Image (cartoon, rainbow, N blue to C red; front, top):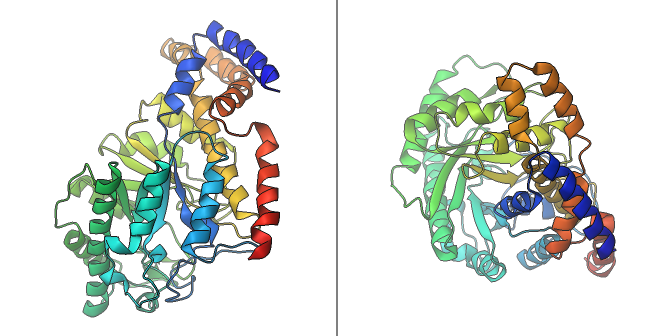
Length: 419
């Protein structure tokens, strides 16, 4: 099998060379891509505090596939298995509800780095980077549908304190791992039906964010980001933290902006937004998901939009300015497989974009030869990117093709069946 993969790669490399593309260089650039894999796929966004139902915040995980992780140890073991099936060295994305408190009641505004020390030590042992998220849902103080924009001073104060605590945790994570931690703020605040006053909650949200970000933290350790949403369960008519709100806030205050591919209208393309916002922002974070008619957080696949996202990052020269993370939770299929499918598709899309004969396409566009541009774009789709991907996996001791699925099935029989 190795000989066949190497032979196919040599032929593919020759074909790409004819178009001015160096496959070795493309693979070397892909090695620099560290995708942040979201821990919450492994336990259906449950966390370990049991403070409230998942739908207290517009979220819903559907399905009841066996093998859900019940503890941090089980979740980390499952993550390790997934990483072993994915080429490259990546990151883990953690929510505040995954704190390990030793069985003690610790509310979210009281969390410290010590409640995540086990996660940091684990990540360090595997050479992983880590990102972090305050959790503004599934909590009694989120039941009204408003957190940082709540009209209740006490509720708002609690969530501001949570945000401040999480920034400090993110900064310490980055310091201990020697890699910046992206600390991302997303809130579910909004209304099911049409509100009369849209302005006041947004004014309160801006003040809350100002309080959270008041302390300047070293960007070597912590990168702040804010994330919008179009609508959610219980906030169908109005979301306080809209895209327009957060674009303005990020530009004015110098934070990063998180673009979640499921948080826009189905006809909107996040790929088209990347170059627009990066004219005014230093960096952005992507939460790559797959919305099916709504923000349903389906597993990422090799769809047109994923390809377009990867192409936009590469064509724009944005690889060092875009932080790629995944964000979905499918409980209807094997959860490790869900991670592996999404991660491998994201990486494969990036490699395909890196293998594109972009200069040839640019020249046709500059020359106004749109016939050639269209023809070349279609011919590019048939180039042997799969042979390069297989070789990349082989060279990183990751399973080639569908062979990874056998390992997942074995793990399911030996581990999941005992849960």
